[in-house]
Amino acid sequence: MNEVLRIAVQKSGRLSEDSLNLFKECGIKFDNGAGKLKATSSNFPAEFLFLRDDDIPGYVEDGVADIGIVGQNVHVETSKHVNEVKLLGFSKCRLSIAIPRSETYGGVKELEGKSIATSYPVILGNFLKENGVTAHIHEISGSVEIAPSIGLAHAVCDIVSSGGTLLSNGLKEVEVIFRSEAIMIGYPNLSPEKQNILNQILFRIDSVQRAKNRKYVVLNTKQENIALIRQLLPGMKAPSILPLADEGWVSMHSVIEEQDFWQNIEKLRDAGAEGILVLPIEKMIF
Ligand SMILES: Nc1ncnc2c1ncn2[C@@H]1O[C@H](COP(=O)(O)OP(=O)(O)OP(=O)(O)O)[C@@H](O)[C@H]1O
Ligand SMILES: O=P(O)(O)OC[C@H]1O[C@H](OP(=O)(O)OP(=O)(O)O)[C@H](O)[C@@H]1O
Ligand SMILES: [Mg+2]
Image (cartoon, rainbow, N blue to C red; front, side, top):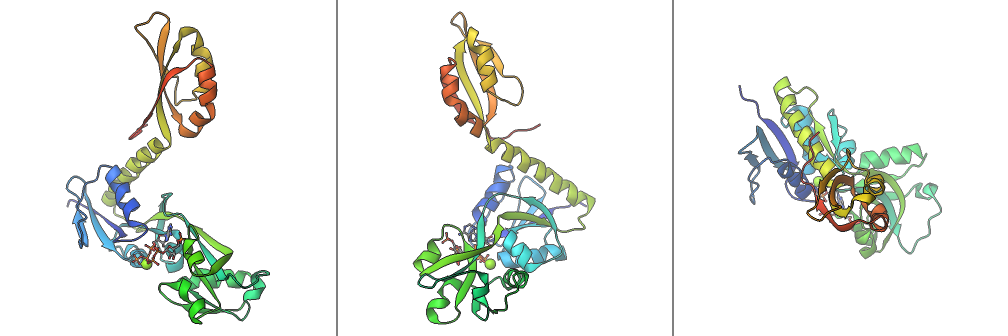
């Protein structure tokens, strides 16, 4: 039988775009047109399910989906029996406790006896327990930041990224209780065929991610500068050196970490590098 890997991604929200791009950058084609809840790839043995993020860990635990992408916050909150396959580095945010801006805050003990509105009762409950605080957790499923202003709770515990939502609701962040990014989770008992398909995807993701952090650098210099410039281009391997039509001049090519490039740019110019080109790399296969 020809096995297909079932992949659960968020239908629409903060994870959707980066999740879909991850697979598209891996060359996996599929149609995710508006209103579509399921799509089969035209060039890879994969099928996509477009779901509410909260439901994804349950589907993966049951094996209805083979892998899924959720925030670590949802993975930990739902506490389903799934494998943690890979951290993905996008949708970074934190789960924080916030109180009205006008109030003072002297530490976690001040939450004793208070009510806190949240969509994350498990993570919040663990935090309060670890800190020996007893508070009333008021579970609501969305628009949590409104709770203090309508008298529903004293404080909130919700996702924060820029802090803009807290600010526009008159709240201030007082405790960061969890840091999160997107994670790929997987069904623990995949068949060997499905594991093989997943391995192919992971190999492609690694190639794409590796390429994202690196640049292809091309520069021209006089032959006598080669040794000095080589020290400033800590590439994967020795740089390629090609002669130019002008006598005594060469072109040097290397792959370097973007961070190293910015640190070394001035030194490269001082060492005699000219016409420096920095090019993006789409994929890097080892
Ligand atoms: N402002 C943000 N910046 C970065 N990441 C975020 C932000 N808000 C949420 N996230 C992350 O993205 C995940 C999905 O957020 P989103 O707001 O789309 O969820 P949702 O409203 O519960 O969606 P759904 O309709 O699928 O249930 C969160 O669980 C969190 O991990
Ligand atoms: O700190 P900020 O950058 O303001 O981001 C935090 C907000 O982002 C998320 O909501 P989102 O905007 O995704 O809407 P939602 O509540 O409908 O999920 C989250 O629930 C916070 O409310
Ligand atoms: Mg949700």
